[in-house]
Image (cartoon, rainbow, N blue to C red; front, top):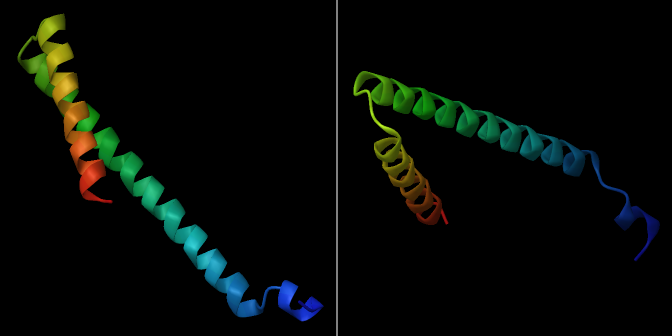
Length: 74
């Protein structure tokens, strides 16, 4: 392998930058979606005046929903 093969080209650097930006945006979008979902759950809990056992069950169901979503995306 010669030196030229070890030095990334401008295209490689640009592509790497684009991929990094896309990953960052995806992380931001996921964080926003989780934040919105947590706020919605808080509203449900408050409006229904749920007790701690019902809240725990709601959180378990939500965790299961995230697990299924994670499995579907692979």
